[in-house]
Length: 216
Length: 275
Image (cartoon, chains in turn brown, purple):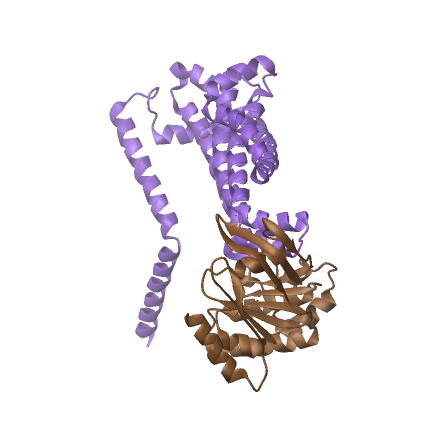
């Protein structure tokens, strides 16, 4: 998954000749201030926006949005089946089990709490056969306890089916808990200003560095 | 002991009555308003003493009873209902199909805009006169029904399709959902309440327009022609039979409004607040 000399903007150029490659089979956290273009970057990967210049490697993606975006008229199970390329109820139920939602398969989105709905969205993202998983601050706005539980659910699901993942977040701690690598975007037009592996030994040091970068 | 029990039963009865009143408050207020309206009507009619201008409520009910006793009444009302349903059905299907097309394709919407604007602005009577020249008497009310229903259903469908949740559509694009599933699970749940609300308005208008067209076209076996004949016999019979026919037309409209509301309730139970 890579960007080559990508130019894109809404009037003013947001990205200009941006080149960046993401390591396959790993989770890369993309950090940056508000309005820096983190979500736009994911939308470009998903093909929801077209770059003005440059090339983006095409891939089949699944997307975990900030809001669950479940189909209101479909049950939890149908929300998975309706988006799967090869609808398989057994496989869908396995993914629901993975996110501890198998007992609620017959419920409708209006009957779910925010955390439950986000788990279903997570199961949907994993059940869809994709090369790349895009995550746009899916844990934002959830209370700390729920967020920590969802981190665990996500890690377990990801380990069962690892794939190239781009995680957009504004929270450096979340990035360090979930990602193998962090990329920091800043500037106008946007450039990669910092990039590092996440290692157990350097976690504290990395957190300080990221906080410093984000403050400036 | 018996006294205590009877007091308790009385208390329970009062509580049950209060709960009933609270639960059916809107209906009771409506019924009250109707009774007040009937009372005012009766007082004015009694004071005026002119049965060919404003008949007494009692006379209208007697005239209605007279109508109900005639077999022709049921055939005429049935045929009017059939024409209304046919006009409504054709207008509804056309409105939904073209509304969906217009909702997803701006070009279609732009192309249909002048036709819809014309149909909305053209006086019903003028349209009836033109259609009477083109079609047989029996078909004129059906055509008028179609022309009344189509613009309403078309506009509500097109608007509801165009305002479908962009977040869900974006999700559907990412997950490459089929057109059929997008239609069934994004557009239809979003559009259904708006279309149903439009259909309720359209049906009431459709009954009005169908009866008007029947009066003008003198359609055989119809509620409208029944009303026209009653009007022609004003001098002998007074206005009570006309009011009785009017009551029948209003009742038809009310029954269908309740039916649409029932369907809406059923869908709401199935899909929750999204419908």
